[in-house]
Amino acid sequence: MSFHLDQTAYTFFEVSPSASAYEIGEAYRRKVRRYPANRVWDTPMGSAAKTGLQEVERWYALISTPEARAAYDETLAGKSCREADGDVDRSDGDNSAHKDDVDKTKDSNSNDLDVNSSTIVAINDTINDTNNGDATRPTIQDLLVATGNPYLYGTLARTILGLSILWLGIFIIVYGTPSTWHVVRWPQVRAAYHRAVLAHHPDKPGGDASAMAQINRAYESLRDPYQRCLHERAQWLCAHLRRRSEAEADVVLPVTTADVTAGSLRTPPSGQVAVLASLHTLWQRAWNAIARLLERLAGC
Image (cartoon, rainbow, N blue to C red; front, side, top):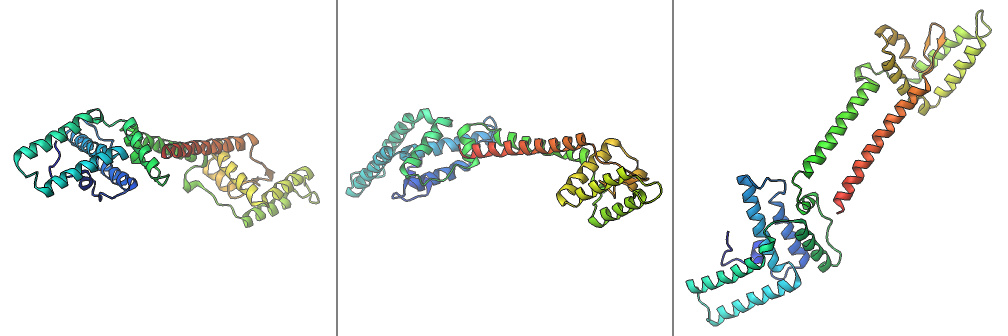
């Protein structure tokens, strides 16, 4: 790989010589994105990407800092003056002299051949300092280049996918498949309450005052939509844990919490409601941890 004799660092990055440090930094990042860091360097495609990335680093080293850029601009200005005065022609000897200057520049930057985190971080710090804090936050691609970890993207994707599959399995175990869900509406709850009252009212023969009091407490709790939603979810959990038959589910599930069957009232055990709440809390904490991790990576 060699520099073109008629090419400068500004033409390589497609910016004007009067461009600001921020514009040069943006052009540098655009060039870097063409060579993803998740390539395997040992493959032919990965080797070509590494070579291209090294060329980008060599050109950028000439104008990466104010001091280096000033020296490079002075060299370009001196060359332009010599060409204007006729002191320099396009002979092979002059071309070889220019190539010697380029080779010296390559030798001075030989320590930058391998892309590492210190190089990228130092360059980004320089851009941020010269831009007076107007630089944008690094992207995920910049993070991958800076860390030098070619498998970071895949690891995050596999982690999120695995947690999603795990939660889907827990959801199916707890709630069942959508075909087994029963949406209970308020008229159904009220009708179940009236049936229970007719069966257990104390004024009727065989009525049970304690059962009637329990029915009234359950009915009052179901008047609150939030409480009714919690009871419905607990009922789904009970239906799975008890492994009810289809015939039994047809009688019980439409009534959900009231669960009036053959004149008796059963409410979901509090322990099963606690299990459901614990699973939901665990899932929320897992997603919050993932969100914080992604924010930290994006803010590096």
